[in-house]
Image (cartoon, rainbow, N blue to C red; front, side, top):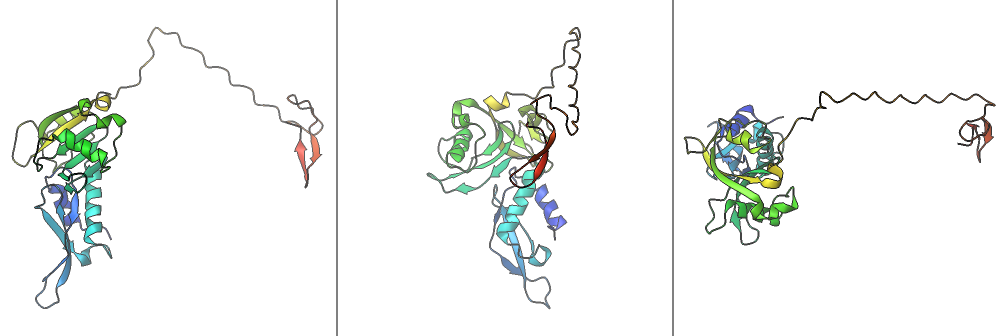
Length: 253
C-alpha cells in the first residue's frame, strides 16, 4: 500500500523549503460516534514546527509508525525538489544549534539558521553541520568559510524549481525572489565557490579546418588453427595435450 495521495499532495503544497518531517506522538480520534477511536499517525514540519499532518493508521502501509511516515515523506520531498540531502530542526551536537539546510549538486545550498541567537552566520552553521557529521561535505574545502558566497533570497517551493545545476537556475526561477512576497520563505542561498564556479559546458568540437584523421585499420582476426598446425605465436604444434586430469587441444600459448 502506498501513501494516501491526498496526504502526499498536502505535503507537497507546504511552503517550507527543506521538506523535512519529524515524528509526533500518536493519537486516537473519533471518526464515527458509533465506533471505537481510531489511531492516527501524525508528523510535523521540521522547519516551521507548526505544520502538522497525518493519516489514519488504517490508510497507511501495515506497521507504519510516525517515524517511518516522517522518513517516507522527507525522502519523497527530497526527491521531488532535487536535493542531495536535507536536515532540519534543533541539533544537539556541540553547543547545540538550529539549522535547516538543503543541498543541491554543485556546491549549492539553501540554508536557514535564523532561530539561533548569537553572531554565527548561516555559512558558519552549515560548516558546523559538516564538522559534527550531520551532513557529509563533497569537498574538504567546505570547512573553510572564506570559500563561500551567500545572499538572501525568498523561495516558494510549492512547485519544485526544476533541475538545478548552477546558481542562476535558482535565481532565474519564478519560485525565487530577492524581495519578500506572500507565500515565500526567507533563506540564504550559499554557494561553495570551487564547485559552483565550474559551469557545465558542451563538449568542444574540432576546428573546421582541422584535417580529419582516417581511422586506424582494425587488426585482422587470428586464423583458427587446425590439428597439426604450428602456432605462429609460440611455435608449438596445435595438438591434443595431456593434463593432470584429462586432456586439452591447443598449443603452448
